Image 1: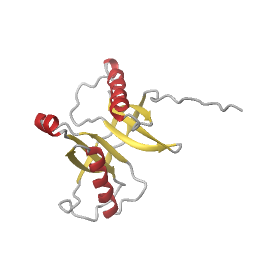
Image 2 (image 1 turned 45 degrees about the vertical axis):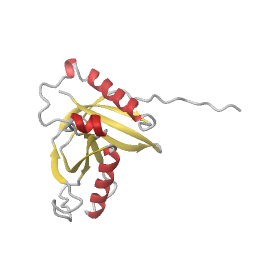
Image 3 (image 1 turned 120 degrees about the vertical axis):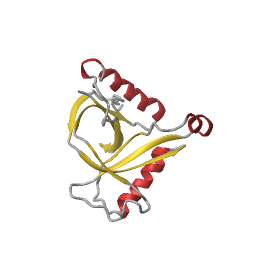
Image 4 (image 1 turned 135 degrees about the vertical axis):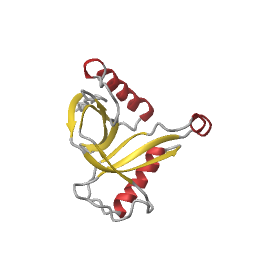
Length: 171
């Protein structure tokens, strides 16, 4: 008997979602592999501070990297944020290692796309998803100001496989 193989679409449909404010602990790293480095840092921070699992982890590019850092050393920047439960207070002081900055991502409305198997070819599939979101978020959904607003990613598991939700602010 021949099995039926159904290829899933790499990218979901784009939807509009509203998210409540999110209190977060954030850290930034500049390195050749900042996503891995800063995620490991924040996982340790969450463990030491006894953040209840499962917790949400968000991330976004950190744009303040010099041309010399990029071109000569191959460095990039990335922020990892752990979403904290209401009324959660960290066990370690902000200046203690591993440090993290507490901040709030305000409530906002986003265009959202989900990428299936995003790490099979991440430097192709993730930029393509952002391109689709940027195109969608132009025109009638274009924001008048980016002040206090960010695009971000959230890695999660769906039906036993990795997916990446990407959020782009819209009006």
